[in-house]
Length: 422
Image 1 (cartoon, rainbow, N blue to C red):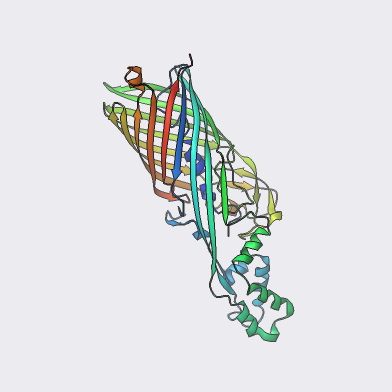
Image 2: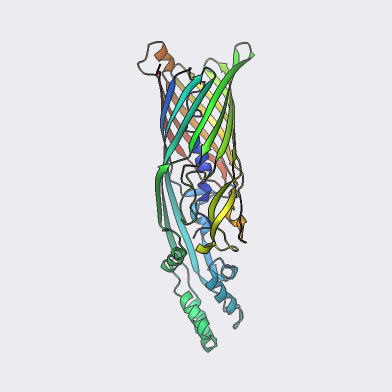
């Protein structure tokens, strides 16, 4: 069963931030567009099916592992199995020998998989010789499947037989109900609190809209070795699907808040065939009012009447990258390592509750390695050696390590071409 928010909150924010890298101005050709020139870009990114994620110890675990619940006496006394079972476990401690009346009702396991893809559509315009403006948004699709298994030996009936006449009517009724605990009962109890279907969630829609501009300049470090700088401020608007407190297994394909970012990259041309560089991105994420279910304590299923408007204070994002680029003429390759980081979120609200549980594991990090190949016909077109100016790029990205983050492996193809409306 899920947390007070989605089982897949690890995808929120980080997925939106990585998807934003597909947009014009960040993934298009380096350098500025000539004044008056329009660039359009389409792209497609397919993620490997997500079944594992990095935990707080940088270890890969099945996505559903954190939500395995053993309905034993300790768990029931904590209230994480619901108030009725908490009352039953508490009463049993006062009846007979506690070592003989400790409940153990079984183990609930979830097997979760998520399939995600994103298509991007964007435009850029050379507003002047020193500035290019851009706008774009991904179209995202997601399918989450959740198979629930309940196993183990339920000892409620044997406790009832052991107590015999000592069990008063209310206690007898509670043990009889506990002995019937199964997947269907748990699913009904979840849905009775107003949660959506827990076996399957599917979505297709626009992601977060991004607008921004880019400027660039060159300096010469030494004779014949120039350094190219690019600076790009941007604004991300929350037009994508954000985490829904009534859905157990949805994915936050959008951030759910406004984000103001800026990126800076440096490239040094070491030889005519080889360059290296660094890039940095920092995004300030603005507070937003959102709906959340606020747990009273540590319960996993939060009552519907605990849903309220809260203030979401999201942590900021940063990305550090190092790249090597090689090739000549129309064909080039690149190798890039990057560290994507989202700092922890905070929630506050007007009702008393365990707000730290909502933001648990929201401090995320993912280190990736990317390899890409591109074909750029722009210069050949300018020399009238090629019919159409375009940049085609194929990229593969693989996770190296992560903290509370998805195990994102993806493959991406993008195509950028140009128009001269003058």
